Image (cartoon, rainbow, N blue to C red; front, side, top):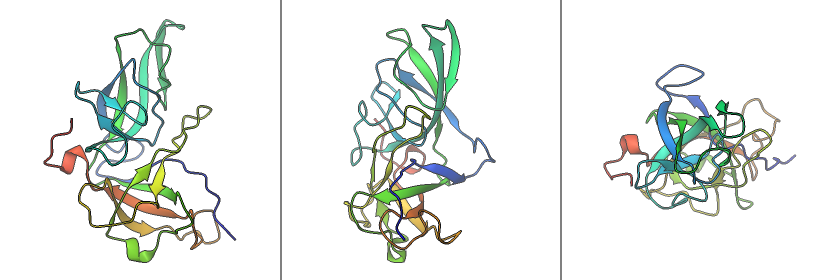
Length: 201
């Protein structure tokens, strides 16, 4: 059997708060910011707003602001406030901002898939730091396409954004549990605003 590569971003499974919100915190998105999907890692821009794949600095640059959980804004077409699990970067007045929720709890743990090459996440990777890639978000359901990028070696590098906590092996025989490429792991923040002494923007 083999794992199917179907990344879903960073799905929170533990944290200091309680389900389903786990102590999410508010932030703002500029109207001009590109789409952000639920489960995308995000960065803080110099104006204090947050951004992801296209508008933000991207993987390997800067300190994470957290993981994106959803947004609400005043819809131009509907003339009312709308709520979505992702930010579509449309239907909002220019030069305004949208509200969003971030997961930035330094104790948060996330479920995520690995990918990028044929390398599987191994037990020997536990305790090391890892990089992510954005992949392609799904506009039909708002879910992120982000995953742990196995083309970047797991290492002790302090600036890498995530820490490998463990492998997913249960229930056995399901996608993500096979000891082969595209398996799933549990990850925590390594380089995030709430635990970094480096300024975020």
